[in-house]
Image (cartoon, rainbow, N blue to C red; front, side, top):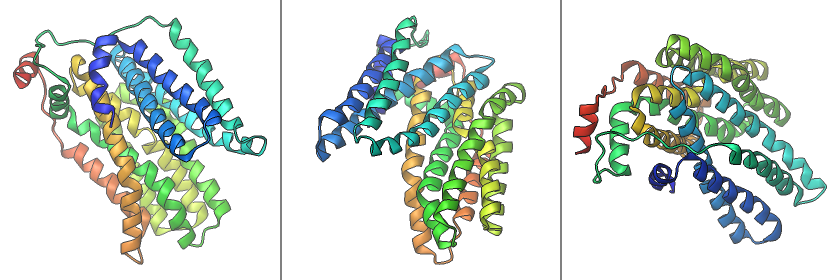
Length: 337
């Protein structure tokens, strides 16, 4: 909801103030869970965390992509690795509830505060602007230009959001249908995340050397093949191995999609492009569990892995056949006039 309105403040204030504001919203909301004991208030706090979190991701992603040129794949892979490690560490806060219901919020709030303080040591910077930009230009026109020149790069970010939530939301239900134990599911799901963390950095370096599009085509095909094999041989051991290899491959599609976007868009459209990466990821995250649940309810003998294979294959085909419009200063000016 807040995404379309973040680009203009970023251009006006710069990267650092938006990171500071987003971090402060998240930290205050986390500590708010301790002091305010109400379901409706918690709903609002969760909403504020979503807004602050998106401000953090948008501003940091845009800052990294704006400062990276030849090594954007490597730099974004470090960003993705940090994100993945934090995402993996989050569930370890849950057992702290046994000591105190407030302790997970206190620990996560303190960790966020510690990381947030380092932002004040950074010097503020601003995204590039087009030399042809006029007063009539606005965020929505820049969104249109970003879609025109870089739509194919938003397919991997959408696919990753779809895949992540389909696995976390639909796979546990499907695994129980297959007769896989809860303990086995608890091992299988982290295998994907571990594979993603291990190969995040190497794939970023490979994308700098061999090209983002080429690497994305290889890893998407590898991921689709892994889930197809898991569908054909649905034993816990085979599924665990396939999840691990698939994580090594498609676990980096989000950061590689952002890197590919930086290759396709002119510098002044990077803020809009980063926002669209976040929006398409969110749309995929919303659609993943809904589509997966509908598929399993509609078809009695539904195989979730075949459904995921088709999704990854569709993204692969879009990358293979899609030919985004190339840009030039004259074209970006004329399309905004």
